[in-house]
Length: 123
Image (cartoon, rainbow, N blue to C red; front, side, top):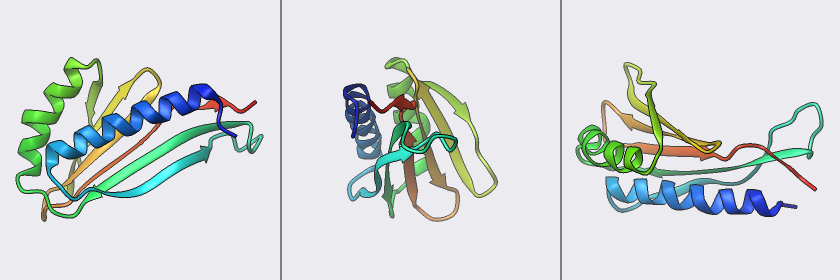
């Protein structure tokens, strides 16, 4: 059972991730969408919502992240942290207890976006 607060957070997070995916182009495929138990000590007591998409092809993904996605999210109050590796450019965004990461492959054209809401108590 989802509490109303988690439902609202899930709707907001889904909308943000979908808007970010559109900045990278067409063809996003949902990879995860649902509740995630986040309290191993008391299963089913606290849950969060996880949502993610993947785009198999994205021309100029690194440039789109820097020139389009970063400014759009920062102006909407999201804070960004660089978590990049040698294999992929990774930007982690956080705001109001929700967070998500954008992974852009350095070789190839794939983009993955995965996020989750803060944990809320199930009542």
